[in-house]
View (cartoon, rainbow, N blue to C red):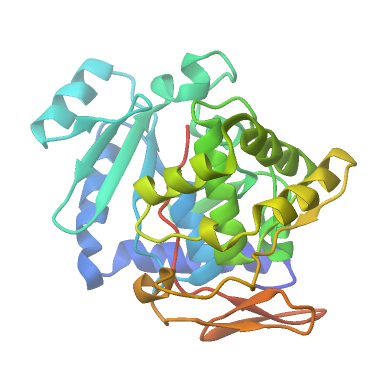
Length: 304
């Protein structure tokens, strides 16, 4: 990514605008869904899709698209959702399986943080304060092609530092699993609050529970590549206020890992320090040299 935040925002705009302007890979059905929602109130894409477009581009993005909508007539909205075969999702919104894509949408009033009293959510920009991960605190408005993000958003992505945005959430263990997946997929380091959160979840539930949760919830599996004892030692640095570089252990043999399901099929190697390096088909330049990135994307679920 660019070294200039404005350039990063411009890049995201171009990628998101392309997604909503092309019919390739059936993206037109997501555009049509946005138009349906937009007829009832302004809507925006939030979170995971935009993060993945920043980090991997349109060719890498294959996951769900999450929307939030500023609708005034909830009864009309509910009727419209039932009319297109939507089902209520776990966190107060609706999920819709289109022919190719899956989309989720939340009216502002029913976002989890608003319902539980953790945030005052009266306009779309307020959603930027309600996501668990700071990497999800970004909006794209299909009607205008504009982007809105929390201060420091693009810097955090550029530096690959993942942090907590709003700590209260309905799925703390699931978010610990996602954090570890992002560490593998995007070579993310954890800011202190997130490191402490993941450490607490491991202590409370046990490592194998997190591994089994990932196995049940995702088609690609990354947590089994971690050495849990080494990981916990690393996470303790978060309690001392330090960022934590989360690196999977290379000593375990690669059997049927996640590569088969990732576009670009990255290979694995061991660097001079004995830690696993994820070698993809693209390299993002950093000041310290070359950072390798996955071309595949994690399954997204933006907790609102």
